[in-house]
Picture (cartoon, rainbow, N blue to C red):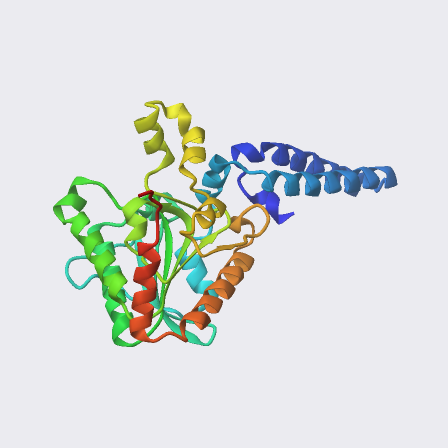
Length: 322
């Protein structure tokens, strides 16, 4: 079973132990060809499938967070290459540098040409360091800004993929004016007259996520999370305790279903059972279908109406009592 090659998370340990028993029994069946062992194997496989379905239908907020951060989860480049193997990557912000934490390019999404931007975390140690663990520098947000202008100039839909713990908060980023880079992106995105669809594929962390997330439609993968601060940061502020992360996840209402119920997210895109990292192709196909469907709906609006639709969407967020 391909799923057993996935590194299990803490809450998945019962599944991992059962999988080990099945693997051991499979070896015995091959060696002995016993019909009784084959029946036992069938029962264990049925038990595995039942436990798996039950486990992923009763996840806590902290479990969704763990899945969103899973090291084997697909990232922006994985989605781009599956949507269009011949996609064209564009580099640099034309001012200072090329931030590897922000990927940008041109690709075909079905029969549509789109401009696409997304954060990238990296897998190997070298890639993670090069991508700054998915935390863009100001140069990354300015690269994204360049893509916003490109989409506007050539009247192409804009797709953004969000999977970042947040913008890099280091000294160099502040020296290069991180806050200004994010603020400019918020302003420019809100004024575009082309369709914009943003998708939270993993972590949607704070202003670093919002800087490429001002969109006509906001989608979230089933196990993605979206929050104004990390649960660890929330726990340290509210409880002053590192062991209150689970409580923070619950209080912050950060899972895809909760964000959808709040009206911030327009649609929750289903993932393969166990998470997107269990089947990259299916996850990419589900996401593509959702994006294409929303682009089709947005294509009926004029440029000024698209801008008004986006601004109206964000002005409705929140609740108050007079």
